[in-house]
Length: 60
Image (cartoon, rainbow, N blue to C red; front, side, top):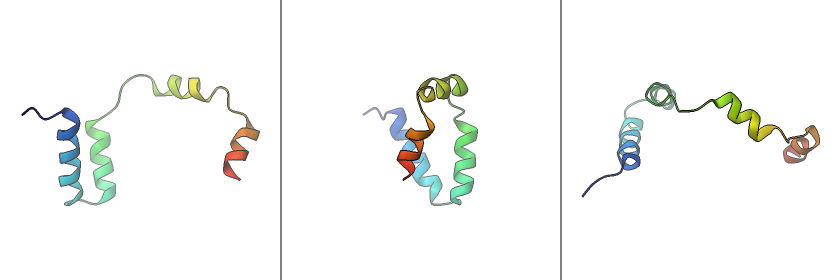
């Protein structure tokens, strides 16, 4: 039976979280998965229609 990449990753995270602190686990994950694409461009694209009033409405 073939195990998916997601299952392998989740198994590693689960095992790792039992042996190191949450902060160290986050540091590890940042090192092994730098993501893909251009985060700044992507963020600007999905935030371009936000207004201050819209954001304040979510906070209240």
